Amino acid sequence: MPSIFTKIIQGEIPAHKIAETEDFLAFLDINPLAKGHTLAIPKKEIDYIFDMEDDQLAGLMAFAKQVAKAIEKVVPCERIGISVIGLEVPHTHVHLIPINDIGDMNFSKPKLSPSMEELAELAGAIRKHYAK
Image 1 (cartoon, one colour):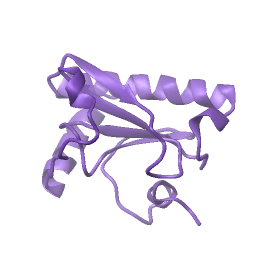
Image 2: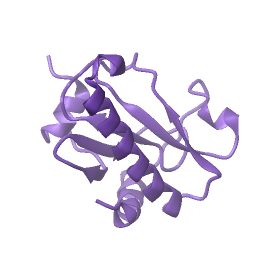
Image 3: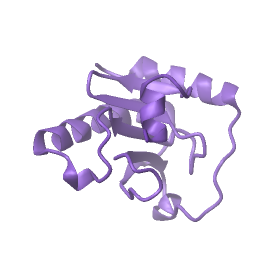
Image 4: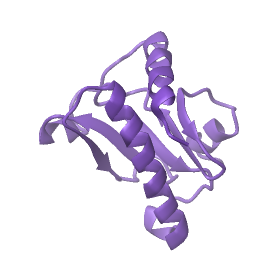
């Protein structure tokens, strides 16, 4: 059965896309820890990040870096934190989270509840800064 991320890639589930290449996709998390919390994923459904081929993993990290640079231009923060947990969806994904403190990466804290309009506006602003 396809993961929720594969359904997003295939257009079966809508997402607030930030960047897309032939191999990767980045979109806003709909239950973010912080404004700008983004997921970067490979389009190929691979459950565990360390099961990726080396060139795929390197490509995902380079893609995530470009996306993070675009987020930084829109969301005021000290850094973009990166986290790979991999338990919640069986499809490799990298969390890119604007942070000012280490506690901003705590996944047990309450999530934000932005409106679809807020997410769409934010995705559009970040997309403008994404360098292809």
